[in-house]
Amino acid sequence: MAPDWRLAALVCAGSAVLLSACSGGGHSGVITIKNFAFSPQPLTVKAGQSVTVRNLDSSLHGFATDDGSVVLGAVNPGGSRVAVFAKPGRYTYHCTLHASMKGVVVVR
Image (cartoon, rainbow, N blue to C red; front, side, top):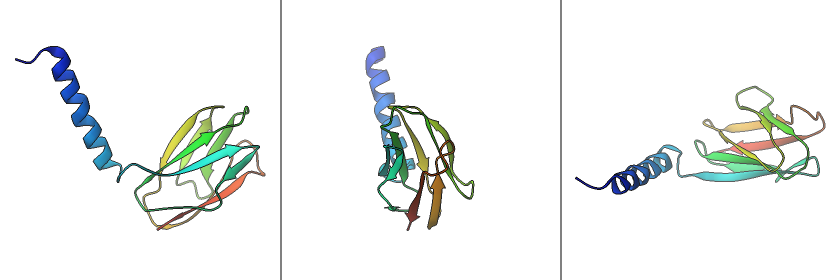
């Protein structure tokens, strides 16, 4: 029987492959929050791939699509959250704490 660390390494490696396969190939895009604005505008991704929302401001922000299909909630300063846009379409989104912050994700 393999030592415990070898078994743990094997399980971790298998999990990483499985997670990569399930996520549709990993992160396909990044939305950055900086100076109370989202960028890039618009962001275009493939259906089923994930989008990381990174907050580079010193203020707390929120993230939600206008139709409610993706709601990440709070994105802490210096933190990030991940969303998956499963279906093709044009998704407008906003900061749930600052009404003037808006953006668009185009999913193909």
